[in-house]
Length: 272
Length: 261
Image: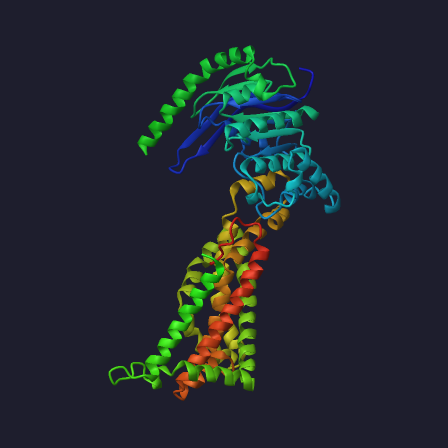
């Protein structure tokens, strides 16, 4: 590969100390590389540790073993090259949409007078130009995600980490948001690591789809390249013959893990 | 229900109560007055007393004193509560060490402190302010402590990932969160500031609404006691209305302004 690797997890292992003192291994020996400009989706059953892996790439979690390299340099502390889009609402509820976006620049020391017009521009590009003065609670779930996207993108991070960002949204809004994301991503092709449990979403968006096994001690068990042409339209691409073929292929692997993960989670619930 | 109807019904309740009071305290039922004037006075006398206070202007001085005491108690108590609440929330060790003492002081009925404050600070306004402060402080303290502790994990992580330093997290995340909790208890804390002032005055002072009531009681002037109570309620309602205005302005980002502490 000629382009530098944006995110490289090498044999990363993540473990937590449980309340009763036992060690719980969430992810075992994960090996994953995201090239610059590449859109990688991680798919796995509930509780497989895909978000954990993302937090490791973000520097929010430290791996128990193995290494994390960002642009070939070992990651120490938080990943300053990355923007992170959270699954839950992460906007500052006491700031207006405009201020929420502008804060991304203000933190870096950009004067407010410069940050505000740029924030307005970003709000417009996510389709919320007219909602600048709304507070998060006055926006719909989808609109809040748009603001969050603008908040992350205004800082122009080299890497975009997304943790089931469209998870809480309804099906139609998810597709609209997916298209918006692809449009914005197409402009400068950042490296993206996108976690989702929705295989269709993963194939429609990504260049590569990575499958994780059911937890605990989950591993990466598959890695598919998505050859669908870009730019894509999420609504259309789902009708594509290749899309279906790939979906069937990946699902045959994923299905077993989903069933395993489901069995484990019900088992765990019974044990409690 | 339209606003006019509601208002009419509200006024009606007051009228019925006052008329009943007037009738029962002046007109004998089966040869007996149910509300003896000595214990219950009557609305006309109470009203006359209130008018007299306002016409002669005596009341203004007392209102002013109570207002000043309440404001001082509120400001000092809130300031202390915010600073210490913030400090405790950010320093779990300090919070853990002081925890039993905070609980102990808070469990103490504040009225028993009034004599001590009177002894320490004299009969002037400061002993009343001190009493109010002990009430306001704990409400604000607990709210701010909670506010800082319960900052959403995601919002915090988001701040960190956006590159905020500890200082910036303080300014943009912890501080607004703590303040919002403080403001949500605004009604309660302002109310307690007034309670502290009035109770302090009642127990020993030379001016204020509490003093006025205490004086009236001392000479068995029941009309005076009731008049003092009515002026006090009106005073608290006015302050509460002001707080609501402030709250609407400050908590505009909140889904609903349900800040009744």
